[in-house]
Length: 116
Length: 112
Image 1: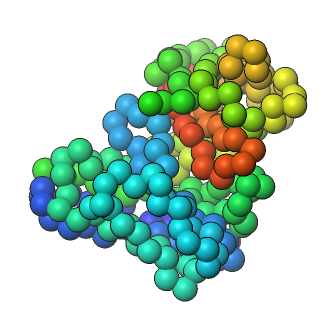
Image 2: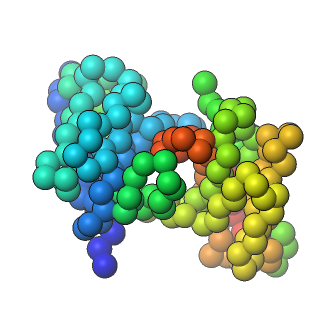
């Protein structure tokens, strides 16, 4: 079946502009995660959605970052007033279940964001 | 503050030989550890994991070793194959957490 998809694959924007990144999780997966990988760094947790529960936004680096998940499926990560330090690869993952029981996270190919 | 560290950014190994990737962690609450493999332009894919109640887990050519007292784990690939050339990420989480903490990755190149 189809895996996690993300769009766009690449995004180049100017400093100060807003961007939206999209994630389509695997159908039926209830948990969705956003991570980002800056140059030379590991994947950094940003936000977690699980079913109808309130999302865990503890990893969002600033209030310029927000995310939503509509209908328990597609998710959009929005970065307002982008800064050069926002340049990174943004990865989305989904898992069948969430919570503390480990369920394998399946990753999308990522969106490479470059802020000029 | 990186809680998971992969101090070797790259590793080059000859085909057929052993690849050893190392990972250190600082958070004593971590009790589940994973290795992910990533090819260019693709997302990371799960490779192998180990729970803290074990010190070794083997899956085919891949073996993960865990030394809890040293807060250290390693991934052994034997024998290494050209298709193993990729970036390998070490990740960890606590028993009461769903968030994974990742290392920066090690790029493995297997030479023919």
